Image (cartoon, rainbow, N blue to C red; front, side, top):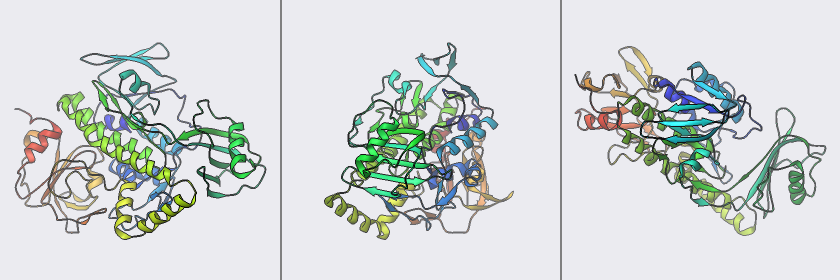
Length: 471
């Protein structure tokens, strides 16, 4: 995703990928939340995912489903689609954009100086880059070599997950006991997806079929004859977050910056949103249209979002177990989430639709995602998200035509006079006052709200898109 964002901005970008191809062992993440689908829609690629997945109400907390079908968004649902398909679709997109991918390569070391980063690859080659972004997962070499601390909590529970064949009919569905949560489900190809909580925490060796068999026997009294595993992996509830998302010319995104339990399916969403927040900022700094200090806003905005996910996943882990006290607590949480206001708040959080970056006080839109309105423009009907396909910022004027002069930024920001007569609604908040004009960043978040005057507009343009051009 980050490579796609940088490529759209005209930056020469390369991916270093240790895998031979885009194939994944195992299914991993199971789909997309609403805000991630919106982000893909902002780039004109959402239909690629929707065509291959299944829309469903996927938002939930601690086993409680949270319906978002009444939220004001075109994508008032999630998408069931395995990560192997999501990665393949994204790879096809960046290849269309001409992104270079160095496959069968690993970053083994790097050295940064005042003007760039020298990156050593495992095959003996090296690359020179202006910036290096570690998107290399929870065990990130880039993070470790940068000396960035990774504080947080050690695991208290461990789960095995596998895709296997069985000789006995399993006890299908989700099961809970004092150890934790377990599940067995049949996949489309007839194999069985198994998830089982281990009795002990701390194993460091890659899991084996014997490990899975022992864990199943401990819970169900049988391993159902598991054999011929297509994939086996282990995950824990470890929760850690990088103390800094940047060290000089080296940055972190996705699991390299934060790891947490998988409850709620929020991990991939965080990574995609990190990339879309960082991409346009990094592109402007590389082009020298904005100062390097713009990169400081990446951590300022994204760190609190990930910290909230760490918090809600740690809480959800506690509710996985099954004893009388935990069951009583889970029942009370379920009752609370059946109420309208808690349901809306938690659904907004889990779907990512409520994210607000702190740009100070102002209109309710400020810092939040711009709704995908149906606009009337001089060029005919337009959707807001369609105007963001090329990842360029927008000034949308809903008042007197040509009321705002952004001449010194016209090379960076597109301006549209637009009409919109419908209601302005935001997820969780509901109806908000109609603005006279909005400045929308390439990531779809509103950076300024004004009209009929331009008070504060020049400051916002300078803050986010660099100083005005000089004649």
